[in-house]
Image (cartoon, rainbow, N blue to C red; front, side, top):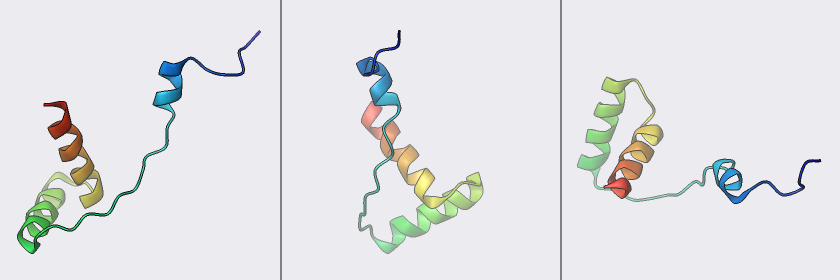
Length: 57
């Protein structure tokens, strides 16, 4: 029989991403946009990647 509530470690992995809004200097935006173009990813995806890695360190 399956439990109605998944274990806590499974609950975390299924959380939906949360949208945030930040304000950055024009130079930061330009650098992010250039890098996102070079890496072939969206600016949003690159910003999330950089933030996640910064928090891990």
